[in-house]
Image 1 (tube, one colour):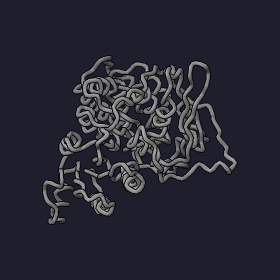
Image 2 (cartoon, rainbow, N blue to C red; image 1 turned 120 degrees about the vertical axis):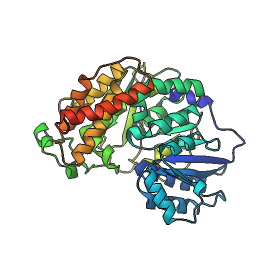
Image 3 (cartoon, rainbow, N blue to C red; image 1 turned 30 degrees about the horizontal axis):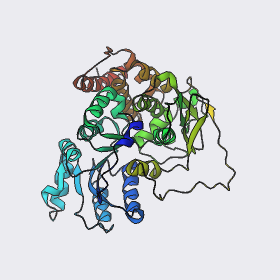
Image 4 (cartoon, rainbow, N blue to C red; image 1 turned 180 degrees about the vertical axis):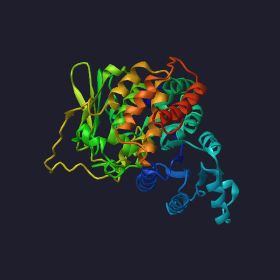
Length: 413
């Protein structure tokens, strides 16, 4: 199911409580989601929004604070379940907080899947970064939930698998990425599919840097994003523009368009979040100041729009809304994104795994910034391509690509 079809699966009219599971609650998207839920409980007169469960990988202190804050919302519902994807962290947390009941705490990756499948959960916010979010996101889709998707890697790795599960379960898959949310908003009410979609990109911290300058870039300079406040992995992806490459692939599966119907433009102000061109040549855009709370809330409340605590678009200011052609020579990751969107198959899983591994190595100071995309290209072009792989094969190639990236970087024999 593509987002354009989700309007036929609205929430039950007699629903008074929305139970929301936030996977990856301590990251930037997860934190913003919790803030959105708090705000919704102040403005939504139809129902209360209950944080049913929240997960973390390593930040136990922040997760406990999220639970504590949620109890002040006045929903008179039990405190949210705390889920730890790292079992040892969860066991230490339980030992230090003995007053918590064991059944209120989940340990290990399996607990995320079980939570995503729980009958009480209405909406799952899939905000775990990278391949780690795949199984829990698929479990939510299989269970017919509304899935607010911030984990683009699920579609990058397993787009055809996701489509099959959507068709079988009639789950709702609504995008949280600001670019894909913008496209989704622009196509609402359109009787015809778009002719083209234009993804915008800020250009990251190296928008004006030469290839030679980028070769000497440090993790500190790469993490200095000019407009967005994100976690380290996504911020590095923005610097290489691999994030936009992954978004090209995500858009291909979300909206059912070919790679040739997708374009990328650089928009440094991050006000125009994306654009849609229709057959008559009309171009629609969605604009707002850069704040992830708006697309998060739209995915939660769709098709309704409620007041949001994001900053208003001040029309009294003199806005510069620059658009530049993306430079595929300086940012070759974009070319890889278009390539993978065209061929599908095993290519997405290999590209995503190689990139995750390379970003980690760069942050650890073991490879150069420009080695990230060069290494991904090398691994992608040396894997045995398969056009219709099952999920098990994609997971095998995920493991292979990480090891192959290290081997080609001369970090393992």
